[in-house]
Image (tube, rainbow, N blue to C red; front, side):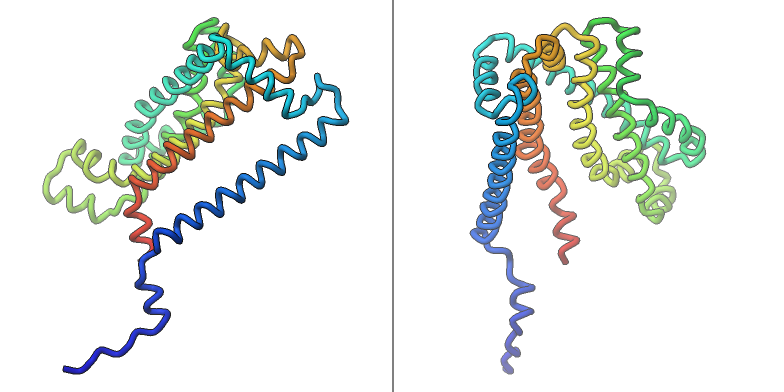
Length: 278
């Protein structure tokens, strides 16, 4: 029996799986680079604060002291939880409304063409304008912030789902018609799996945008939450507290992105990476 010819180095490398410790080393190097960037930014911030009054640009140490005192108060966690709940509710309602509408508009070309100008109009309206309308309609209530988050996140989700339906393989649709599948079955068994990746990408963007616009809504029309505390601190010229609340929200979004959303996306759609790496 003839021996098989030896593989070249390129063939061995191409066929070899990525070593676990090599992946860990890569993640560690990336982590250290990010920590270095963070240290550089804090250093620049410290140097810049030396030449400015504390009420204009407080230094990192002063902001950390303000944040520590805020965390020690019960109202901090109450406001933190209220803001997160409002953002989550607005985002959840946006997903419940945006996904079915995106599927329906994508599955029906006539409906898509008819409602496309409406979606364009909604996308052009600023979140600040939606906040003013919400304040008029809902007053100083939770629904003011929830409505603004909804009107910011829903068009993003709807548009991405709509565009995702256009990538559906036409052969699958013809096959479904051959088997006499109903419109509902076509939507759930063909369109829905196809739009999951673009939906998840849109959801990450929508949640981030929703968290930012929630501050605008709470600043204009709320009596609690992070945005309300930011306005209160700004009125009292407590710039260190403004920085502390802002950095708290940024830290929350980074934790959600790095520890929940990104790992979840990698786990759900790792088949795409495997298919693309072949």
